[in-house]
Length: 370
Image 1 (cartoon, rainbow, N blue to C red):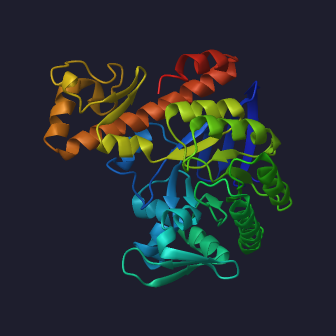
Image 2: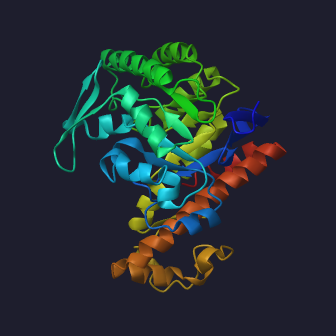
């Protein structure tokens, strides 16, 4: 096997939790891994240099949004998103499937054509076919690409879910064909089926026939409870190929991630660390802290006295409370950086505990904290 080929290595297991490595030409990704979300080629409010300091190994970009702004002509001038945004580590791109759900009022589905969007910026008609999604992701120069799928809104209607599965399976096969015999980049299939075990296994069984490089659980964190999400993961994750990365899309809180790792999930992404940073919510080893609260107005302690990144341990909760209440941009930048750094430290600690065979103790300590 060539060194520049995409591959996954399962290093260790502790009950169902897994320690692994994803090898890409742009670097190794240690799993369980958290991917900060950089939808438009930026993780909001955070310098790329600081992302590197948090030891983030991969970030997520978005096919639909980058297709519209800045557009492929611009990105192709830089030979991809890495040079455009000055990030030289791996990038995973969502295919645009999530926007089929989140922008449902602005699109309609045609199984043959794909997703037909009315652009949210200028109203122009955009057809995002499975083939075009892969072409765009190749132009972005993604290290891990996702198949285009239909991600339905939260529903228990089996007819809606079955229809989404049928469309998603057809599109997944077309994405695989469009990608060709590409060994350097990963292409992941996406398992749909809502909260029904039989539907998810039906979808997975057919996806496996295409031998994707990894498999994602889609259609979760769309309105169901954490208990419901954990239940369907418990029932289905074990059927995912053991020798391929397992990705839970759009999740989540630290406890969501911890619970999913305990079921055997390897990869995560979520806007929560930076979105929370912009609203004054900080994640710490003592739990989440709403820095808007007046009780922090005179609190001289930092969020984490051991965090020297950008001297974050020099900023008091009192100062952060002041920045929030005066609408200073620095508040969101500092709290977002704290949150991304915490998430990466949280993932690192999980990897260490899985390696030691102590994951269950770590799980028990933190599962109810967030």
